[in-house]
Image 1 (cartoon, rainbow, N blue to C red):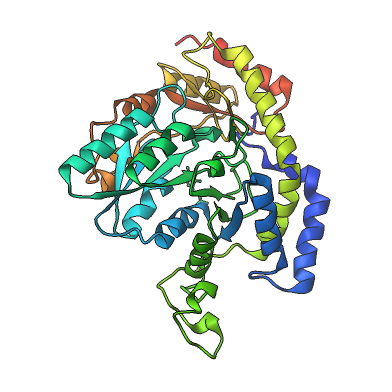
Image 2: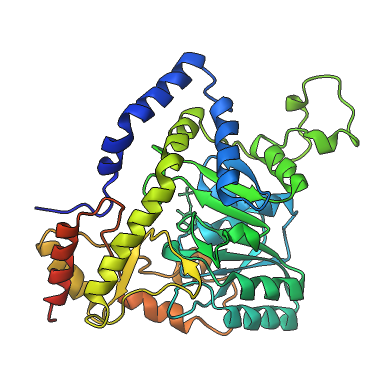
Length: 386
Ligand SMILES: *Cc1c(COP(=O)(O)O)cnc(C)c1O
């Protein structure tokens, strides 16, 4: 029997009646766009992260990354530092606004941005003088927090803004705190397979700045006038039709917000279930394969992926597939090696990123993975000799 890589149906069986009722409620009130559930969900999301944060929902986790850059006026001549070992969305939004992504290598143990490599990349960019360092995007890759205390200190030393791309890591903590403790903006995605996923696309930004929230609220709805525009603009018609900046159409559907409100209720419990699955993998695999993943000291992961490393990665994947065990490779081609991105700066090279792309293999991972199925996966991996 084939196992699921991510079993979304198991979760749905558990919450289906509540989801059906939530959707029915939206159909009854008819506020499909920016309905009451959207505001309710934004507030619930902010309450989850704490730190006085405010939530702003949008259409997907990619738009969530560009909204703070737009609010901060990042543009031509500006450098945005980000990892290359990440999903395409992280660097993709930088050229959208005519800024330049600068690729930074990762830590070999956590797969997240290496603070020393960041420091070196900033020094190189400053020395060359072609681009002005403006923003760092750290990625909570595979679910665990980046090294925020170190990265925040570097950002402060150089006057840079910090975005936490927590599309995979939303719900992770470091020293008991969510990434919003350190980041100027935390972004996430509600793509169905993410740890907190909707039944369609969705995304959100968290911020502690009321001004940033207002600006992003403007940018997500075609640059509409918001309260902070009132002083400098006079209008006696609907401010919705006063477009004071060039924005986007990037809203979270009310139906998705209603579904996410139900999913957020069980999210803390699901994080604990994911952690138990990860611990079981670790006990079964560590020392018997190249390396089982480790989380940064003081950190917790939401385990969007459980990624092992093996010298014969492709051989292992084929062997597991023949036994009905699906795997995936994140990421086979790092972003700085992708054709449209080759032209962007990669100061000091990315040797760790390039080596990891050859060895990483993601195993089935979701809160509802049964111990018996997991034992089968562990036995198959330990029995592989190739
Ligand atoms: C999924 C993901 C995104 C983008 O999310 P979408 O909702 O698919 O646009 C951004 N960054 C990372 C690291 C992701 O994994």
